[in-house]
Length: 469
Image (tube, rainbow, N blue to C red; front, side, top):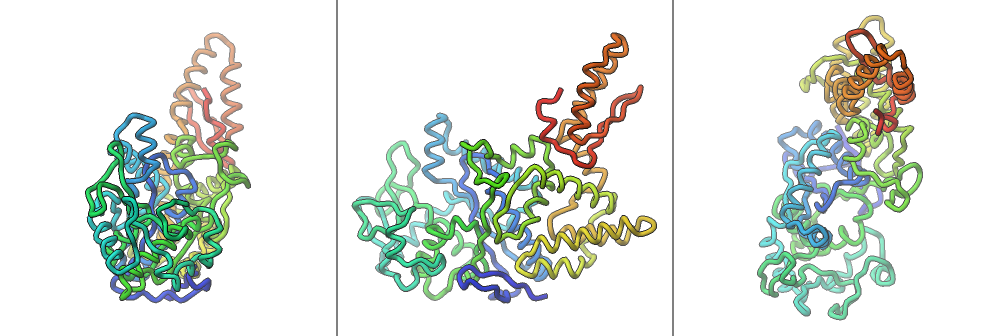
Protein backbone atom coordinates (compact mmCIF):
# COMPACT_ATOMS: atom_id res chain seq x y z
CA UNK A 1 0.00 0.00 0.00
CA UNK A 2 1.43 3.36 -1.08
CA UNK A 3 0.53 6.37 1.04
CA UNK A 4 0.51 9.85 -0.51
CA UNK A 5 0.75 12.91 1.75
CA UNK A 6 0.85 16.65 1.02
CA UNK A 7 4.16 17.95 2.33
CA UNK A 8 3.90 21.59 3.40
CA UNK A 9 7.67 21.96 3.02
CA UNK A 10 7.57 21.13 -0.70
CA UNK A 11 3.97 22.21 -1.44
CA UNK A 12 3.40 18.93 -3.27
CA UNK A 13 1.65 15.64 -2.68
CA UNK A 14 4.40 13.05 -2.33
CA UNK A 15 4.71 9.32 -1.99
CA UNK A 16 5.42 8.66 1.66
CA UNK A 17 8.62 6.68 2.14
CA UNK A 18 9.55 6.24 5.81
CA UNK A 19 13.18 6.54 6.81
CA UNK A 20 12.84 3.07 8.35
CA UNK A 21 9.65 1.05 7.69
CA UNK A 22 10.23 -0.76 10.97
CA UNK A 23 10.34 2.53 12.90
CA UNK A 24 7.83 4.98 11.46
CA UNK A 25 7.90 8.13 13.61
CA UNK A 26 5.47 11.04 13.92
CA UNK A 27 5.42 14.14 16.14
CA UNK A 28 2.36 16.37 16.56
CA UNK A 29 2.25 19.56 18.62
CA UNK A 30 -0.07 19.14 21.58
CA UNK A 31 -2.00 21.52 23.85
CA UNK A 32 -0.99 24.16 26.34
CA UNK A 33 -2.80 22.90 29.41
CA UNK A 34 -4.47 25.83 31.14
CA UNK A 35 -8.15 25.36 30.17
CA UNK A 36 -10.60 23.10 28.37
CA UNK A 37 -9.76 22.21 24.76
CA UNK A 38 -12.00 24.09 22.31
CA UNK A 39 -13.33 22.33 19.25
CA UNK A 40 -10.64 23.88 17.06
CA UNK A 41 -8.04 22.12 19.24
CA UNK A 42 -9.75 18.83 18.42
CA UNK A 43 -9.19 19.07 14.68
CA UNK A 44 -5.45 18.19 14.59
CA UNK A 45 -6.10 15.47 17.17
CA UNK A 46 -8.66 13.78 14.90
CA UNK A 47 -6.67 14.37 11.70
CA UNK A 48 -3.47 12.84 13.02
CA UNK A 49 -5.32 10.12 14.88
CA UNK A 50 -6.63 8.92 11.49
CA UNK A 51 -3.10 9.10 10.07
CA UNK A 52 -1.82 7.17 13.10
CA UNK A 53 -4.44 4.47 12.49
CA UNK A 54 -3.52 4.30 8.79
CA UNK A 55 0.21 4.03 9.51
CA UNK A 56 -0.44 1.27 12.06
CA UNK A 57 -2.55 -0.57 9.50
CA UNK A 58 0.07 -0.33 6.75
CA UNK A 59 3.29 -0.81 8.75
CA UNK A 60 2.06 -2.65 11.84
CA UNK A 61 1.13 -1.14 15.21
CA UNK A 62 4.43 -2.18 16.77
CA UNK A 63 6.39 -0.28 14.09
CA UNK A 64 4.79 3.17 14.55
CA UNK A 65 5.74 5.71 17.22
CA UNK A 66 3.50 8.72 17.74
CA UNK A 67 4.54 11.59 20.04
CA UNK A 68 2.20 14.40 21.10
CA UNK A 69 3.42 16.77 23.80
CA UNK A 70 1.86 18.75 26.63
CA UNK A 71 3.04 22.32 27.16
CA UNK A 72 2.81 22.65 30.93
CA UNK A 73 5.06 25.70 31.39
CA UNK A 74 3.72 28.82 29.71
CA UNK A 75 2.73 32.40 30.52
CA UNK A 76 -0.96 31.56 29.94
CA UNK A 77 -0.70 28.96 32.69
CA UNK A 78 1.04 31.47 34.96
CA UNK A 79 -1.72 34.01 34.33
CA UNK A 80 -4.43 31.45 35.09
CA UNK A 81 -2.70 30.58 38.36
CA UNK A 82 -2.49 34.26 39.31
CA UNK A 83 -6.16 34.85 38.46
CA UNK A 84 -7.47 31.84 40.35
CA UNK A 85 -5.03 31.58 43.24
CA UNK A 86 -4.48 27.91 42.39
CA UNK A 87 -1.09 26.29 42.01
CA UNK A 88 0.35 25.77 38.54
CA UNK A 89 0.70 22.05 39.26
CA UNK A 90 -2.99 21.71 40.14
CA UNK A 91 -4.05 23.58 37.01
CA UNK A 92 -1.88 21.60 34.61
CA UNK A 93 -2.74 18.26 36.21
CA UNK A 94 -6.47 18.97 36.03
CA UNK A 95 -6.50 20.35 32.50
CA UNK A 96 -4.29 17.52 31.22
CA UNK A 97 -6.80 15.02 32.60
CA UNK A 98 -9.66 16.98 31.03
CA UNK A 99 -7.89 16.98 27.69
CA UNK A 100 -7.29 13.23 27.70
CA UNK A 101 -10.89 12.53 28.71
CA UNK A 102 -12.30 14.79 26.00
CA UNK A 103 -10.01 13.42 23.28
CA UNK A 104 -10.89 9.85 24.29
CA UNK A 105 -14.57 10.79 24.03
CA UNK A 106 -14.08 11.77 20.37
CA UNK A 107 -12.36 8.48 19.66
CA UNK A 108 -8.68 9.44 19.64
CA UNK A 109 -6.16 6.72 20.45
CA UNK A 110 -3.52 7.71 22.97
CA UNK A 111 -0.14 8.42 21.32
CA UNK A 112 2.87 6.23 22.10
CA UNK A 113 4.44 9.05 24.14
CA UNK A 114 2.84 12.13 25.69
CA UNK A 115 5.80 14.04 27.17
CA UNK A 116 5.37 17.08 29.39
CA UNK A 117 7.65 20.05 28.80
CA UNK A 118 8.60 20.30 32.47
CA UNK A 119 10.07 16.78 32.33
CA UNK A 120 12.53 17.86 29.60
CA UNK A 121 14.08 21.02 31.04
CA UNK A 122 17.52 19.38 31.27
CA UNK A 123 17.37 18.38 27.60
CA UNK A 124 16.29 21.89 26.61
CA UNK A 125 19.17 23.49 28.52
CA UNK A 126 21.63 21.10 26.88
CA UNK A 127 20.32 21.95 23.40
CA UNK A 128 20.51 25.69 24.12
CA UNK A 129 24.10 25.37 25.38
CA UNK A 130 25.02 23.50 22.21
CA UNK A 131 23.45 26.18 20.00
CA UNK A 132 25.38 28.91 21.84
CA UNK A 133 28.62 26.98 21.38
CA UNK A 134 27.93 26.64 17.65
CA UNK A 135 27.25 30.36 17.25
CA UNK A 136 23.53 30.01 16.62
CA UNK A 137 22.36 31.55 19.90
CA UNK A 138 23.41 34.25 22.34
CA UNK A 139 22.70 35.42 25.88
CA UNK A 140 21.27 38.89 26.53
CA UNK A 141 19.93 40.27 29.80
CA UNK A 142 19.17 36.85 31.25
CA UNK A 143 17.56 35.69 28.00
CA UNK A 144 18.97 33.29 25.44
CA UNK A 145 17.90 33.95 21.87
CA UNK A 146 18.30 32.07 18.63
CA UNK A 147 20.18 34.17 16.05
CA UNK A 148 18.06 33.86 12.91
CA UNK A 149 20.74 35.41 10.70
CA UNK A 150 23.05 32.52 11.63
CA UNK A 151 20.82 30.25 9.53
CA UNK A 152 19.35 32.54 6.90
CA UNK A 153 19.59 29.91 4.17
CA UNK A 154 16.93 27.78 5.87
CA UNK A 155 14.75 30.15 7.85
CA UNK A 156 11.36 30.83 6.27
CA UNK A 157 11.31 27.94 3.80
CA UNK A 158 8.47 26.08 5.51
CA UNK A 159 6.11 29.05 5.60
CA UNK A 160 7.43 30.47 2.33
CA UNK A 161 8.31 33.81 3.88
CA UNK A 162 11.39 35.95 3.39
CA UNK A 163 13.10 37.10 6.60
CA UNK A 164 12.79 40.78 5.65
CA UNK A 165 9.08 40.34 5.02
CA UNK A 166 8.61 38.57 8.33
CA UNK A 167 10.24 41.43 10.25
CA UNK A 168 7.50 43.72 9.00
CA UNK A 169 4.79 41.17 9.84
CA UNK A 170 2.91 40.21 12.97
CA UNK A 171 3.81 37.80 15.79
CA UNK A 172 7.35 39.13 16.18
CA UNK A 173 8.20 40.28 19.68
CA UNK A 174 10.17 43.52 19.72
CA UNK A 175 12.71 43.74 22.53
CA UNK A 176 15.81 45.94 23.05
CA UNK A 177 18.05 42.99 23.88
CA UNK A 178 17.54 41.39 20.45
CA UNK A 179 20.28 41.69 17.84
CA UNK A 180 17.72 41.07 15.12
CA UNK A 181 13.93 41.61 15.42
CA UNK A 182 13.38 38.04 14.18
CA UNK A 183 15.52 36.43 16.89
CA UNK A 184 13.35 34.36 19.20
CA UNK A 185 13.61 33.45 22.86
CA UNK A 186 14.72 29.99 23.92
CA UNK A 187 15.24 30.83 27.61
CA UNK A 188 13.92 33.70 29.72
CA UNK A 189 14.37 34.79 33.34
CA UNK A 190 11.74 33.98 35.97
CA UNK A 191 10.67 36.18 38.86
CA UNK A 192 10.21 34.69 42.31
CA UNK A 193 6.50 34.09 41.71
CA UNK A 194 7.03 32.36 38.36
CA UNK A 195 8.11 28.77 37.75
CA UNK A 196 11.83 28.53 37.12
CA UNK A 197 14.81 26.21 36.89
CA UNK A 198 18.50 26.83 37.49
CA UNK A 199 20.52 27.24 34.31
CA UNK A 200 23.88 28.67 33.17
CA UNK A 201 22.00 31.93 32.49
CA UNK A 202 20.30 32.16 35.88
CA UNK A 203 16.95 31.00 37.16
CA UNK A 204 14.48 30.93 34.33
CA UNK A 205 12.15 28.93 32.12
CA UNK A 206 12.13 27.82 28.50
CA UNK A 207 10.54 29.62 25.60
CA UNK A 208 7.76 27.84 23.77
CA UNK A 209 9.60 26.63 20.67
CA UNK A 210 12.56 24.87 22.27
CA UNK A 211 10.44 22.27 24.06
CA UNK A 212 9.28 20.49 20.88
CA UNK A 213 12.80 20.42 19.44
CA UNK A 214 14.21 18.88 22.62
CA UNK A 215 11.43 16.33 23.07
CA UNK A 216 11.38 15.30 19.42
CA UNK A 217 15.14 14.74 19.46
CA UNK A 218 15.03 12.72 22.68
CA UNK A 219 12.12 10.50 21.63
CA UNK A 220 12.47 10.31 17.84
CA UNK A 221 16.09 11.18 17.03
CA UNK A 222 17.68 13.84 14.85
CA UNK A 223 15.42 12.98 11.93
CA UNK A 224 11.99 11.41 11.76
CA UNK A 225 9.18 10.96 9.29
CA UNK A 226 6.23 13.28 9.95
CA UNK A 227 5.62 16.46 11.94
CA UNK A 228 2.06 17.72 12.16
CA UNK A 229 -0.12 20.46 13.59
CA UNK A 230 -2.55 23.20 12.71
CA UNK A 231 -1.50 25.67 10.03
CA UNK A 232 -1.55 28.46 12.63
CA UNK A 233 1.64 26.87 14.01
CA UNK A 234 3.53 27.00 10.72
CA UNK A 235 4.94 30.40 11.62
CA UNK A 236 6.56 31.07 13.94
CA UNK A 237 6.45 27.85 15.95
CA UNK A 238 7.32 25.24 13.34
CA UNK A 239 9.69 27.59 11.53
CA UNK A 240 11.57 28.08 14.80
CA UNK A 241 11.59 24.37 15.59
CA UNK A 242 13.26 23.67 12.26
CA UNK A 243 15.90 26.36 12.79
CA UNK A 244 16.83 25.14 16.28
CA UNK A 245 16.83 21.46 15.42
CA UNK A 246 18.69 21.66 12.13
CA UNK A 247 21.37 23.91 13.65
CA UNK A 248 21.73 21.72 16.74
CA UNK A 249 21.79 18.50 14.72
CA UNK A 250 22.88 19.32 11.15
CA UNK A 251 23.61 15.65 10.55
CA UNK A 252 19.85 15.00 10.64
CA UNK A 253 17.06 16.56 8.66
CA UNK A 254 14.51 16.93 11.48
CA UNK A 255 11.05 16.17 10.01
CA UNK A 256 10.94 14.78 6.47
CA UNK A 257 7.24 15.51 5.89
CA UNK A 258 5.33 18.47 7.33
CA UNK A 259 1.53 18.30 7.48
CA UNK A 260 -0.84 21.08 8.50
CA UNK A 261 -4.59 21.04 8.92
CA UNK A 262 -6.73 24.07 8.11
CA UNK A 263 -8.68 26.00 10.72
CA UNK A 264 -12.24 25.64 11.97
CA UNK A 265 -15.28 27.89 11.81
CA UNK A 266 -18.64 27.73 13.56
CA UNK A 267 -21.77 28.36 11.49
CA UNK A 268 -19.66 30.03 8.80
CA UNK A 269 -17.85 32.44 11.12
CA UNK A 270 -14.54 32.45 12.92
CA UNK A 271 -14.99 30.96 16.38
CA UNK A 272 -14.88 33.72 18.99
CA UNK A 273 -16.14 34.24 22.52
CA UNK A 274 -17.28 37.74 21.54
CA UNK A 275 -19.50 36.26 18.81
CA UNK A 276 -20.99 33.73 21.22
CA UNK A 277 -19.96 30.80 19.02
CA UNK A 278 -17.05 29.54 21.10
CA UNK A 279 -17.40 25.92 22.21
CA UNK A 280 -15.16 23.49 23.99
CA UNK A 281 -15.31 19.77 23.27
CA UNK A 282 -16.65 19.35 26.79
CA UNK A 283 -19.43 21.87 26.06
CA UNK A 284 -20.66 19.79 23.12
CA UNK A 285 -20.44 16.55 25.09
CA UNK A 286 -22.39 18.15 27.94
CA UNK A 287 -25.03 19.33 25.46
CA UNK A 288 -25.60 15.69 24.56
CA UNK A 289 -23.59 15.38 21.36
CA UNK A 290 -21.95 11.93 21.36
CA UNK A 291 -18.20 12.03 20.78
CA UNK A 292 -18.57 10.06 17.55
CA UNK A 293 -20.94 12.72 16.19
CA UNK A 294 -18.26 15.37 16.76
CA UNK A 295 -15.69 13.15 15.08
CA UNK A 296 -17.99 12.35 12.14
CA UNK A 297 -18.54 16.06 11.44
CA UNK A 298 -14.79 16.69 11.45
CA UNK A 299 -14.08 13.78 9.12
CA UNK A 300 -16.63 15.04 6.58
CA UNK A 301 -14.19 17.76 5.47
CA UNK A 302 -10.69 17.17 4.08
CA UNK A 303 -8.04 18.20 6.59
CA UNK A 304 -6.48 20.78 4.23
CA UNK A 305 -9.78 22.63 3.79
CA UNK A 306 -11.42 24.97 6.31
CA UNK A 307 -14.02 23.12 8.34
CA UNK A 308 -17.36 24.56 9.38
CA UNK A 309 -19.08 23.16 12.47
CA UNK A 310 -22.85 23.59 12.21
CA UNK A 311 -25.79 22.17 14.12
CA UNK A 312 -27.22 20.93 10.82
CA UNK A 313 -24.07 18.90 10.17
CA UNK A 314 -24.20 17.51 13.71
CA UNK A 315 -27.81 16.38 13.25
CA UNK A 316 -26.95 14.80 9.92
CA UNK A 317 -23.97 13.05 11.51
CA UNK A 318 -26.19 11.68 14.26
CA UNK A 319 -28.65 10.29 11.71
CA UNK A 320 -25.87 8.72 9.68
CA UNK A 321 -24.31 7.07 12.72
CA UNK A 322 -27.69 5.71 13.77
CA UNK A 323 -28.00 4.24 10.28
CA UNK A 324 -24.50 2.72 10.43
CA UNK A 325 -25.01 1.26 13.89
CA UNK A 326 -28.23 -0.38 12.70
CA UNK A 327 -26.16 -1.89 9.88
CA UNK A 328 -23.52 -3.41 12.18
CA UNK A 329 -25.75 -4.32 15.12
CA UNK A 330 -23.92 -5.82 18.06
CA UNK A 331 -21.09 -7.58 16.20
CA UNK A 332 -17.63 -7.27 17.81
CA UNK A 333 -14.63 -5.57 16.23
CA UNK A 334 -12.43 -8.16 14.51
CA UNK A 335 -9.03 -6.64 13.69
CA UNK A 336 -7.95 -9.81 11.90
CA UNK A 337 -10.33 -8.93 9.07
CA UNK A 338 -9.21 -6.87 6.11
CA UNK A 339 -10.87 -3.43 5.85
CA UNK A 340 -12.51 -2.24 2.65
CA UNK A 341 -9.84 -1.71 -0.02
CA UNK A 342 -11.42 1.44 -1.46
CA UNK A 343 -11.73 3.01 1.99
CA UNK A 344 -8.05 2.33 2.72
CA UNK A 345 -7.13 3.67 -0.72
CA UNK A 346 -9.03 6.90 0.02
CA UNK A 347 -7.19 7.40 3.30
CA UNK A 348 -3.88 6.63 1.61
CA UNK A 349 -4.62 9.46 -0.84
CA UNK A 350 -3.62 12.32 1.47
CA UNK A 351 -6.11 11.33 4.18
CA UNK A 352 -9.21 11.81 2.06
CA UNK A 353 -11.61 11.18 4.93
CA UNK A 354 -14.57 12.48 2.92
CA UNK A 355 -14.06 9.83 0.23
CA UNK A 356 -13.42 7.19 2.89
CA UNK A 357 -16.72 8.19 4.48
CA UNK A 358 -18.48 7.71 1.14
CA UNK A 359 -17.14 4.16 0.98
CA UNK A 360 -18.36 3.54 4.51
CA UNK A 361 -21.78 4.92 3.62
CA UNK A 362 -22.00 2.72 0.54
CA UNK A 363 -21.27 -0.37 2.62
CA UNK A 364 -23.99 0.59 5.12
CA UNK A 365 -26.51 1.19 2.34
CA UNK A 366 -25.68 -2.22 0.88
CA UNK A 367 -26.22 -3.87 4.25
CA UNK A 368 -29.64 -2.24 4.63
CA UNK A 369 -30.63 -2.92 1.02
CA UNK A 370 -29.68 -6.59 0.87
CA UNK A 371 -32.31 -9.16 1.76
CA UNK A 372 -31.53 -10.25 5.28
CA UNK A 373 -28.99 -8.86 7.72
CA UNK A 374 -25.49 -10.25 7.07
CA UNK A 375 -23.04 -10.74 9.93
CA UNK A 376 -20.19 -10.97 7.41
CA UNK A 377 -21.03 -7.56 5.94
CA UNK A 378 -21.48 -6.12 9.43
CA UNK A 379 -18.06 -7.34 10.56
CA UNK A 380 -16.40 -5.89 7.46
CA UNK A 381 -18.18 -2.57 7.89
CA UNK A 382 -17.17 -2.32 11.54
CA UNK A 383 -13.55 -3.20 10.73
CA UNK A 384 -13.44 -0.56 7.99
CA UNK A 385 -15.00 2.09 10.25
CA UNK A 386 -12.29 1.41 12.84
CA UNK A 387 -9.72 3.05 10.53
CA UNK A 388 -11.75 6.24 10.84
CA UNK A 389 -12.27 5.82 14.57
CA UNK A 390 -16.01 5.25 14.09
CA UNK A 391 -18.48 2.55 15.21
CA UNK A 392 -16.39 1.86 18.29
CA UNK A 393 -19.43 0.57 20.21
CA UNK A 394 -22.14 -1.99 19.60
CA UNK A 395 -25.56 -0.75 18.52
CA UNK A 396 -26.91 -1.42 22.01
CA UNK A 397 -24.06 0.52 23.64
CA UNK A 398 -24.52 3.37 21.19
CA UNK A 399 -28.21 3.76 22.05
CA UNK A 400 -27.47 3.58 25.76
CA UNK A 401 -24.75 6.22 25.46
CA UNK A 402 -27.11 8.58 23.63
CA UNK A 403 -29.71 8.31 26.37
CA UNK A 404 -27.09 8.94 29.03
CA UNK A 405 -25.42 11.80 27.16
CA UNK A 406 -28.68 13.61 26.48
CA UNK A 407 -30.09 12.91 29.97
CA UNK A 408 -33.01 11.16 28.30
CA UNK A 409 -33.36 8.71 31.16
CA UNK A 410 -33.70 11.58 33.62
CA UNK A 411 -36.15 13.44 31.37
CA UNK A 412 -38.14 10.23 30.87
CA UNK A 413 -38.46 9.72 34.61
CA UNK A 414 -39.61 13.32 34.99
CA UNK A 415 -42.18 12.91 32.21
CA UNK A 416 -43.48 9.70 33.78
CA UNK A 417 -43.92 11.53 37.10
CA UNK A 418 -45.82 14.33 35.36
CA UNK A 419 -48.04 11.77 33.68
CA UNK A 420 -48.82 10.07 36.97
CA UNK A 421 -49.82 13.41 38.50
CA UNK A 422 -51.87 14.32 35.41
CA UNK A 423 -53.80 11.06 35.68
CA UNK A 424 -55.04 12.27 39.06
CA UNK A 425 -55.56 15.96 38.29
CA UNK A 426 -56.78 15.46 34.71
CA UNK A 427 -54.48 18.34 33.71
CA UNK A 428 -52.18 17.08 30.96
CA UNK A 429 -50.88 20.47 29.86
CA UNK A 430 -47.34 19.96 31.28
CA UNK A 431 -47.20 16.43 29.88
CA UNK A 432 -48.18 17.70 26.44
CA UNK A 433 -45.69 20.59 26.66
CA UNK A 434 -42.76 18.33 27.50
CA UNK A 435 -43.81 15.69 24.99
CA UNK A 436 -44.04 18.30 22.22
CA UNK A 437 -40.59 19.66 23.11
CA UNK A 438 -39.12 16.17 22.94
CA UNK A 439 -40.71 15.47 19.56
CA UNK A 440 -39.40 18.84 18.34
CA UNK A 441 -35.90 17.71 19.39
CA UNK A 442 -36.26 14.55 17.34
CA UNK A 443 -37.08 12.19 20.21
CA UNK A 444 -39.74 9.50 19.88
CA UNK A 445 -41.85 9.32 23.06
CA UNK A 446 -43.19 5.91 24.05
CA UNK A 447 -45.47 6.01 27.11
CA UNK A 448 -47.10 3.10 28.91
CA UNK A 449 -48.36 2.22 32.37
CA UNK A 450 -44.90 0.83 33.20
CA UNK A 451 -42.91 3.91 32.28
CA UNK A 452 -41.67 6.27 29.57
CA UNK A 453 -39.11 5.32 26.93
CA UNK A 454 -37.41 8.11 24.97
CA UNK A 455 -35.77 7.05 21.71
CA UNK A 456 -33.62 9.48 19.65
CA UNK A 457 -34.72 9.34 16.05
CA UNK A 458 -34.09 11.04 12.73
CA UNK A 459 -33.19 14.71 13.13
CA UNK A 460 -32.30 14.31 16.81
CA UNK A 461 -30.94 17.62 18.12
CA UNK A 462 -29.55 17.36 21.67
CA UNK A 463 -29.11 21.13 21.84
CA UNK A 464 -32.89 21.49 21.99
CA UNK A 465 -32.96 19.42 25.19
CA UNK A 466 -30.83 21.89 27.12
CA UNK A 467 -32.76 23.13 30.16
CA UNK A 468 -35.72 20.93 29.29
CA UNK A 469 -37.66 19.71 32.31
